[in-house]
Amino acid sequence: MTFPAPLTGVVPPVCTPLTPDREVDVPSLLRLVDHLVDGGVHGLFLLGSTSEAAFLTDRQRRQVVEAVVGHVGGRLPVLAGAIDMTTPRVLDHVGAMAAAGAQAVVVTAPFYARTHHAEIVRHYRRIAAVSPVPVIAYDIPVAVHTRLPADLVLGLAADGVLAGLKDSSGDLGAFREVVTGARAHPAFSVLTGSELIVDAALALGADGCVPGLGNVDPHGYVRLYRLCRAGDWEGARTEQERLCALFGMVRVGDPARMGGSSSALGAFKAALHLRGIIDCPVTAEPQMPLSGEETERVGKFLAAAGLL
Image 1 (spheres, rainbow, N blue to C red):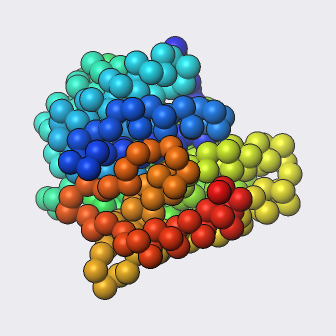
Image 2 (image 1 turned 135 degrees about the horizontal axis):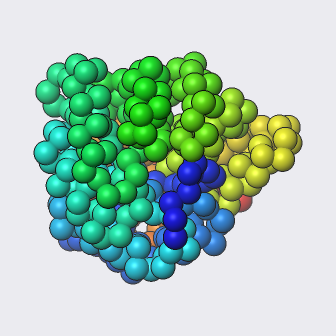
């Protein structure tokens, strides 16, 4: 299928189910994809933060993309993260992801080294010049410690370097600046990665959302998207608030023994396991697993949301 311009709708960042020995659990992955497709999502984003891409080997990354692309068979656009520290390493991922069948790649700013905005621009221009598929920028300062300012993103959009932006900055004011400027570039897609403010982002004019919680409840995010597009803002607010309550599961982990990533990704996988979608809730090392008591709390969030 032709990659949509702009990409719109609900495009969840797909979790990567793992076996107990931490290999990719392909049967569980494909059941998860079917769960998302049945929920009505509009695309799939593989190898993002929720996918634990940073923890996967290059072999596992390619395995994920090949399995999902083959299973989906062109029914939905499939995006793949090409996330790494430097331009040469990202270029290697871009080639591998495109060869595996991804229809677009999602790329952060370089990280580890301190990076100037001029170097970020050079990074994206170099990648777009080589990539056989569209390039979408990924603004996630909590992970890469660099912001993608609106003027940088919109300048690259105007030059045709970027096909879109996935914004996980949590800064709604800055997001609004990009949305406003992107009206001059109708093929450019602006997506929020902040699952707690999807209704607000869509009200501002966003094209869609990339919600990690959408793995657990894709039907809810699709309902939310449809309510917003229909202009039923009261109904959208009610659905968003239900999803915000469900999102509370990401805090079940004890901060005295695990980081926020372990808690959130562990909760998503525990929820998928409790719903019978994946076989094993294990997360990649060195993340800490949830305890039995913490997993029970995840179940209570699911029950309260009507998902058990």
